[in-house]
Length: 362
Ligand SMILES: NC(=O)c1ccc[n+]([C@@H]2O[C@H](COP(=O)([O-])OP(=O)(O)OC[C@H]3O[C@@H](n4cnc5c(N)ncnc54)[C@H](OP(=O)(O)O)[C@@H]3O)[C@@H](O)[C@H]2O)c1
Image 1 (cartoon, rainbow, N blue to C red):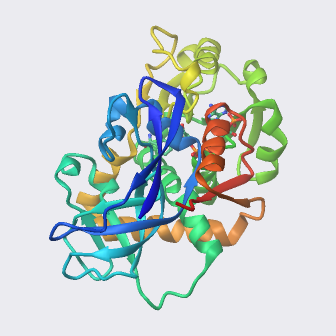
Image 2 (cartoon, rainbow, N blue to C red):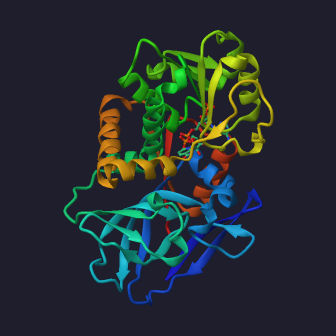
């Protein structure tokens, strides 16, 4: 059987190639072969590539040097199984490679989930090794599946960020500034701050000029500012900056303007990979990286994984019901077109209203 996979040069994510592969249907005992039905692409996948070596994202789906395979979130169907307890035809949701097929070795098999127990994944954050099994009688709901792929991994981070900052009373900040306010991760966080609003806090969305009207229209930010309006922020109000995409110029401008009023500075992602640099010395609090899987691990210990997933799921469903009318899901077919979408997001050409959902014809 023929398959296809997207390879990125780990040292330069501008370079890529599409590789056609022979997919072996001969499985070792305990393995399953999956055909990847569809997956989402967002700026978060660019961070996976940009931090592939530092955080370890290249290790999930090894490829011959200098190439790496970017992980994505999506749905897949089991097309062959040599594993007791998992049958061909079953569908699942989780972390997958940017490819048409994948072989896994299920472990900890439960009615609703399993993990990929492949040896090379054992030391990677557990949140990425969990797969959700879809019951065979689950009615097809394309919109729900699209929202799950596009938002669930990002909203999990929004939820964990909100949980972390509420636990810390926002480090005393009154102004909560969300950078890349048009990103799904920031929008989810803004929605949670709006849902659990306090008169003590003002949530400010900071975005590029072109996305300002869109961010304002969401209605979840108390104020919306363009990156060229940083000087309008008050310097006498304790402020927290949550930087979604690592634009070093914006970060420096904010720290310089706010000075000691910057009581906490949080780095969440570096999808602005080409504008990322080590912050060095800047006025105000020293930036600290927020790695969602670490905080998730803490909450899994406190609440258990299932309760954590339920809490995240309930909040996301509420958001989807209350207000995602702005979302335009755009399906893309085939590897060549998928590679182009990835390049557009990498180059900062993506429209935040569009949710890209990819399906590959091997
Ligand atoms: N640390 C973690 O565990 C974790 C988990 C989830 C997500 N994240 C991070 O959160 C960030 C947002 O991800 P997402 O998937 O939510 O994004 P998304 O929905 O695809 O958002 C796209 C928006 O992000 C900004 N942006 C990001 N990269 C850009 C680039 N290279 N050039 C220009 N604009 C860019 C732009 O917003 P503006 O115009 O508003 O700036 C753009 O409209 C990513 O950096 C991601 O890695 C981190």
